[in-house]
Image (tube, rainbow, N blue to C red; front, top):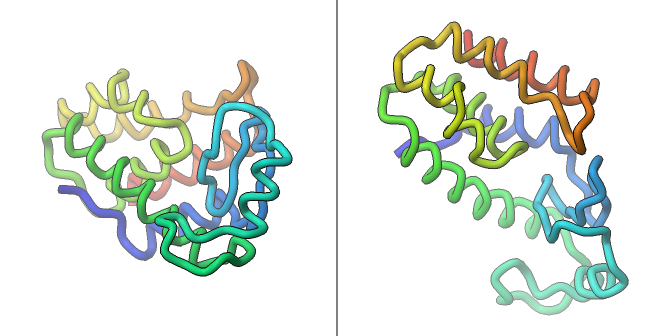
Length: 161
């Protein structure tokens, strides 16, 4: 199974940022930590209250304000799901940089790219074309976002390294 590297995790965290309170992402979805999606709507007062007296992602800690340990626990849980998605869709050998770049992409966009032309090109071992395909995943809320364009360019550079 594919696993993100420590460098890949740092790359992802650098793009996502680390926010220790609930916030609305660029399309208005409630998010916390390192890009952990809470739900597909705006932050609510219930979200704010929950994370002010949080018992950890697995409910095993004393009530506390959401902290860095919680953010990294959510990240590990989320990455585990995406690593399984990558293994389910992609059946060829990838370099660690290709794994890290692809996991960053699907962490940000969901598994959709794996079932698209990008995934087809990977499975066909057309790695340069797949790298170029990354650049098309720069929309959120129906609009091209400059931040996503920059992130996709960085993923492409990492993928080709």
